[in-house]
Length: 105
Image 1 (cartoon, rainbow, N blue to C red):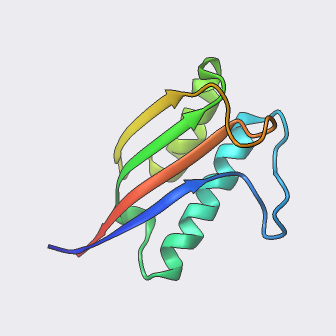
Image 2: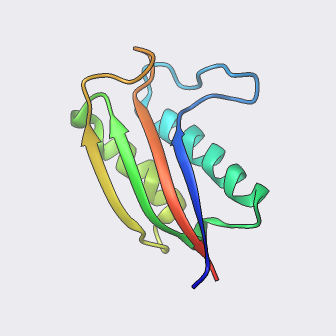
Image 3: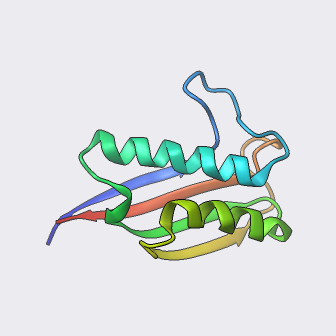
């Protein structure tokens, strides 16, 4: 069995902690997944090791934008994915929060 890596709820913040993509669910998803990619790489993992993603969204009506961005990162990898609408995230400007599980062989 490989090592398991969990990246907890990740949002669309840049390296200075500023939210990226105000009112743009696709941009926020791309930034959150970029942050996840960087977190994985910092421990020797890569996107190809991801087996599950959980996406929490403030507005499920924007699922296509979010799914399109997710597909840019995971199109050929195809991890198990769940998208759930929540009442709100920690900040009203945040539209997306994502967590992943990866297994390193």
